[in-house]
Length: 225
Image (cartoon, rainbow, N blue to C red; front, side, top):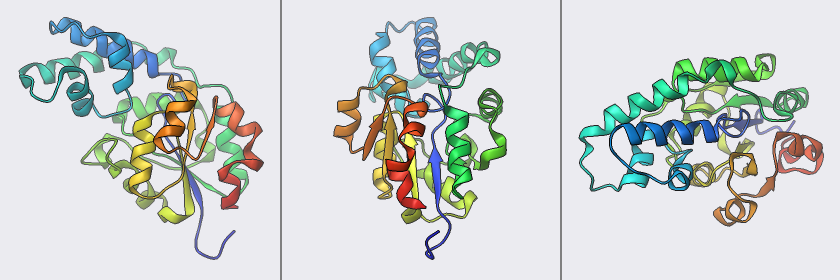
């Protein structure tokens, strides 16, 4: 390890390690429909990865009447919660975390989900033996693309931004990392294409955790060890 301090890998959870992106899309779409908004699923999908406030701005516009926001958020939480016992890790996710930990890297789950959802996602992932720290929505005042959750993750794990790589699946993940000059490795398993992730500033793009694991020794993560 470098003498500049411990090194680590920050991982987004939703859509990066656990296959939830389209569950969130459907949950938001249904919650919006209940509140009387006809929002195309494609537009909803492109907002997944932001916090709920920013997602609703993205889908409905920042100048909207916000009177229904709390009802839409509650609807999303209720609908998504139905699927908690059916959550599945993406291919290679647990093995990737363990491979990073085996290299002496601190593995941090940099997530902005609720505490209940974090528990469900960690249970689905089944790799807590490799995880040094994790965050949830309570740890950051602003959601992505703000870098607040990454700052919280660094603090919890005792890491410096210059000694980490962030792994995410959305352009909002890439943007959050860019605010802190953290290299972001992106995965397309959340439904965003390689060209868009690379165009947003991802330093490398892979299909899913299994593909990153296969290429780990040649990836930006290898430079940390």
